[in-house]
Structures are given as C-alpha cells and as structure tokens.
Image (cartoon, rainbow, N blue to C red; front, side, top):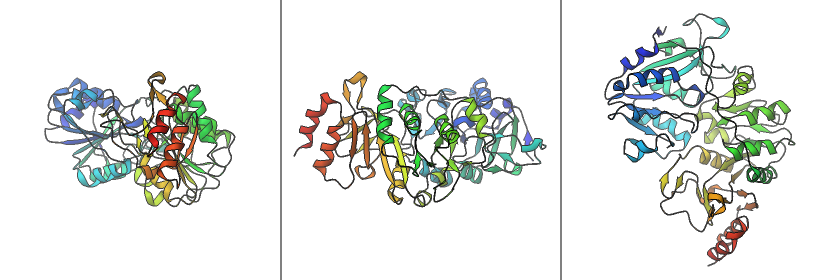
Length: 424
C-alpha cells in the first residue's frame, strides 16, 4: 500500500543527482509543483523530464534553482530562456521513440504524476487506480521508476477503458481534490475554415483519422460533420472529437482494429469533455507504444494522418518545429502517424497549413527550408499538402511536378517566384 504524504513532503524526497519524471497534459501534478515552488532549493542538482502539452503545461523546472537541469522534447515560450541558457537538453525525438528513451536510455529515480481515485468508492490501497486523462508513457514509467509519487485525485476523471495502476506500484500517495486544468478551445478564423474544407474533401466515409491540436485541426474536425462511419486513432482527443462522436460521425464501425472504439493516448479540452470521458467506455486510452506504434498503425486500413506545419519547401520537406533556426516547439508525433499512414492499406498523410505567416508577408511554402531549420518530415513522408488555396497531391510525382503543385497552392503574390524556383 502506498504511504500517504502531503504535497510539502515531496520536496524532501529529492536529492542532487536524481532524475525525476513528471507527468504532463491534464495529469500534471499541479499541487506537488506548487509545493516545489515553495521549496525551490530541493530542485538543486536534479534533472527533470516532463511529458508536456504545449499551451497547457507551462512549468519551467530550471527556474526553481540555478543548479536544476532538464531534458525536453518540446520547447515552449515558458522554457525558451532556460533552453537558450544551455540548461535544457532538447532531444529531437518522435513521440513513440520517447518511450524508448524513458525505457532504456534514462534511469528514472522518481516519477510524479496524478491518478484517478479508486473506483466505486473503494478504500485507497484496496483497489486499482486509474491513469486519468494521460497515459502516454505510463507503461514504461512504472516499469522503470525506482519510486512513484501519485496525486490521488477524485476530481480527475477515470475513463472506463484506460490503464489500471496497482496500489503496489505507487510508493507515496498525495491526496488532492482539484479538477484538471482545461485547455482553451481554439477559435478558427476564415483561413483555418477554408483549409479545413479542403482537407475534408480528402477524407472518405469509413476512414480512420488522426489529428493534432490547434485551430486548423479543430476546424478540420468541424468540417467533417457530414461524413459517415469515421474512426479515430490519434495521440490526442479534444472537444472536436467529442462533438463528432455525439453526432455519430465518429463511431469506429468500419475500423479493422479497435472496432467501435476511439483510441487516444491523452485528452485535453473543456471541463465538459473531461466529464464526458469519465463515462465513455468506447474511448480507449492507450500508451504511445500502442497509439503511435508502426505495428499498430499498419493494421488500420485507410488510416489518414492530418497534421500541421510551419513551412514546407518545394521538395516536400516539412518543418513543424523551428523558426529562423530557433527551436520553438518539438518534433512531436506527426511523423509517427505519417509513416503509419504509409504502411496502412489505403492510408494517406495530409499536411495542412496556412499559405502565409506574419500577416501575409511571409510565404509558408518556400523554395528551400529556411536557413538553420531542420526537416521534421522527409519529402517522402507526405502525400497531400493543403492550404486555403487548394490541395497539392505529391504522390508518385517527379520533382518538377511536385514543385509546381506546391507553388499552385501558395498565396497568389508568391506563386511566380516559387514557380521560377521550381524550374531547373
């Protein structure tokens, strides 16, 4: 049985030289993090790793103490200063491969997370706990962590078809009672809605889709309202998915695996979404080893990955993480899904982005990726590129034809320059 402690006891478990994993998403252990802020000296000499959702998880562990260090897979506005100061080691890593790093490459001395309280009012320690709204790395973390601290939170929804955590796997239980932080719903603009309509034209009844977060993915879900028998297999689930499930658009009726189930690793969104998930046995939460695994995705016929980008060049290379050579986010799981779509019978990968940035002054379709920018996805990973101006089908097309197709969906003011750049 876990030992019950208070949030203010947790800093006393830390020591220099330790590596500490902290859960993210809606499972972030906020009460314990508040206790760390009150005793920042405890973070000295500790290496921190957090599985984050940009825009929701904003804690910079390096800000606790000048001798704190972090390993990160995303850079956020809140952590950018520590990254530039050399105190964060950024690892460019697809999300599925992060599980390998946690499972093999790092020794985790302590894991801190939130779990749902035992079901049916069972006595704490006498029943399993729920993994809550984020089970991305729960399998490898419990296998590898030497000790586990869990906020046991009755206000954290316990989805019926999610991983169970045995009481014996938790060393210290911190009783808390606070609802998970909501994630603001995007407000798509006219450009996002135009892009979404073009994406929706590529999705057929019976397809299984994957989407990300942000205004374009949210708009895409809204544009799919008239489709039928869609499946969902994704890294993340939000209010847009809830709406389509409630409408019967997403029902998983034609899925070749997990039929009738909507599969995700984590969920973020409104309080209404969180309450809904606690009562939905058809939403299946699984770790990224399953949701992002190539073997899993290859078994899903007609799997359609839908992801966003910051820029794409005329060769079809995608940059989804850097601006002017600076890391502004992370590699994420998009390429896991793009390559999963390539291995799926009838699968397609779609990259959707606005044609311009900076108020129309900068084209997101460029002759070559910007100086210093890395390619998140290779030119061979992308089937369709979509902007508000149309769709470029890159499948099986030679270089010049690919470049011409991409130039044709750029903003009109940039097309002649791009057409010239695409000619030999």
